[in-house]
Length: 207
Ligand SMILES: [Zn+2]
Ligand SMILES: [Zn+2]
Image (cartoon, rainbow, N blue to C red; front, top):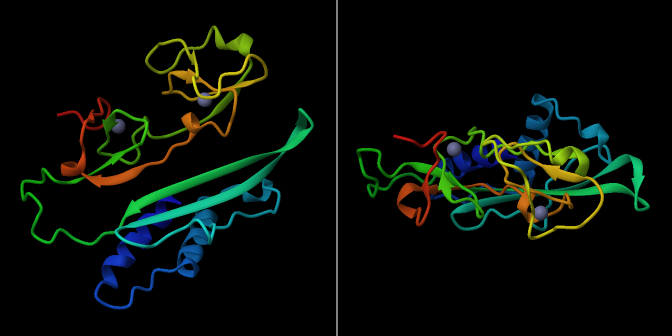
């Protein structure tokens, strides 16, 4: 999805001034190819593939927003539930050029932020932006530490007392719901000058 968003962002630039040919069909073609190239195991979803959501996805204004929703069948039933519903989204700023307003010294480059994060990132590939969600039991949890060596705290948004929990390497909380917004990673591409109240990421945006 990130690749599709970025690719579509470049199309926006190429088509600027013309009728923009940004539409769901071309995004879907890029997306399908990207899934194939990345060898995504889409066969494990309930419908055997993943499609961009035509209702939620948007190509209006300066941003491209792509959404997918899919269900993954579980090998083991969980409270009678045999499927996990997953929603993912990507928002990319269209590559509409600099229009002379950019600081030539490169101080107004594009950076990446997340709604819940407190830092901005220079690199989309920064480990702090990468969410690899693991499911662990509560018993294992006490022995586990995140990448900063901290224990996982209970998430304030989804905290429940029982069942498996979900953690990420760089997160500080454990979650009892996979659909918790604390586990969602929405990444925005914005200009450095639009960054307010964020520090630089210690991993990828240091001096
Ligand atoms: Zn970073
Ligand atoms: Zn949570």
